[in-house]
Image (cartoon, rainbow, N blue to C red; front, side, top):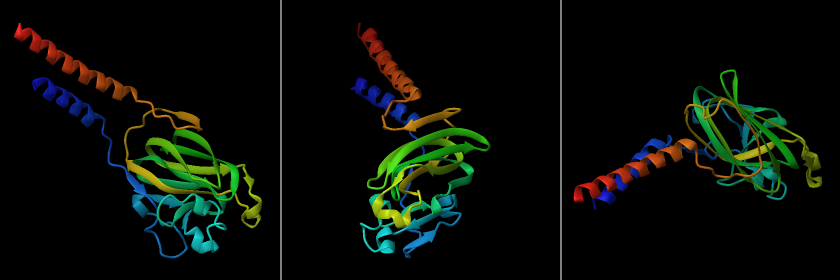
Length: 226
């Protein structure tokens, strides 16, 4: 019984040390009842530049005509997009974590989106990923301790059915934020193609520490029994 209690104590210690601040998912469905509106500074405690939300089906008249504004939807009726395919920025006076979100291109296939995360003037993260208009892709951004992130987009081929809306914008739904942590690296640059979950070195170290505690308690028990 003591061994079981010791194991639970050790695992509880590891869990307490590795738990991050509670994450908050932003689905953009509480902004407006109109088919389209720009995001105001202060929404969800952040500042938004060149960002608007849209109910694509209501705005374009049908799901088929809405392109990625419908295909990129993962909850509710609204998605966020960058107006006119221009750079979109999210910022705050204090640091925050941007964990990820569900992304799609608005009208193109093979659209490249680049997300750069800053702390002050320092670039901490520089990530690029490819999107299509016909499906939503969850992008694990993993940006910690930033105070600004800027999204830009380029390339891609506009689908023939959307020639009248041929800008290369993107849409995003259900972005996940949390309170700011210290940056996990001085600089990270990668192209997001697949999302593999790899245990962090700190987490592995803490798990090892917990196992050592349990092993020490077992050894002591055997010694006392002898």
